[in-house]
Image (cartoon, rainbow, N blue to C red; front, top):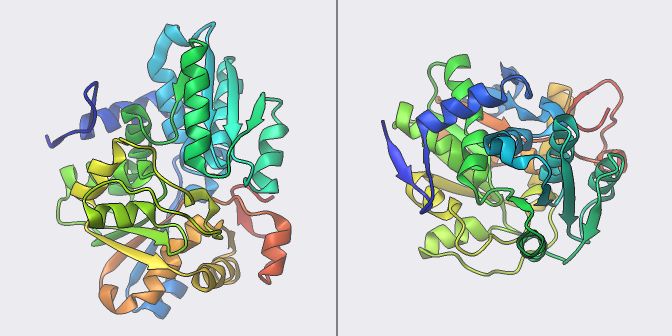
Length: 338
């Protein structure tokens, strides 16, 4: 069993991911993994899509949130749970708190998109808008939780959250026994950290590739530098991965030690990938999910002849943005836009 120490209080390991899978099974969907002949022809390789855009609440985030909350057991009763998010973690948190009958409070940055704000406001969960960057928002939320004896549910800096996200890989290993590469969107690193921990323990030869927008690539630059950096982020269509990484995040070690390569993509490539997925796959995905498609097509020579999995992490894109890109929501499968 491969064990990876990521905090003083806990470890991310494959057996923890399997336990998370059992714990959250009745609360999340086993999302499809389907072949894409269209993308395969364009890229010159065999392409499979892991459709977390079809997850409950529209993204992979519910896996980590549910695992973290359910791991608390009876101690969660009667206490306020607190989260911070640019959108998808918040939507998952609001759903989980409501479904489990718990009290919650959510913080979001003032730069969150209207689509993601409206989803959270519709739940009635108390919401505070704080900061321009996700790190500012997370620090404010964690401080409030500490000062009010509340339970902080981090979007990525928590072994329970990372193990919950790692269940994407546990499913994938069953759905597609043999593959060469997995391309994963990266923000704070919880998804790729959990998936890489699972994949490297089971099949260390699988190449795990992180995808980030050039406009906001803090984790990729930090890994290259060997330490977490504080870097500015520009606006990006991949708003779900935008912003900095919390100082001391456990995900940095996971990304540094287990992610094999990084691909950075531009805004035009992300926009084109959103359109392509809609037109060719009849799917609606957000910018973060489209990054894996953009990365594959931009670097197709690196993947030629291989069996590649693209993680489509979420579907939260508002109708106006989709229409501006030349797509239409009607008739497509979607996680968030229906």
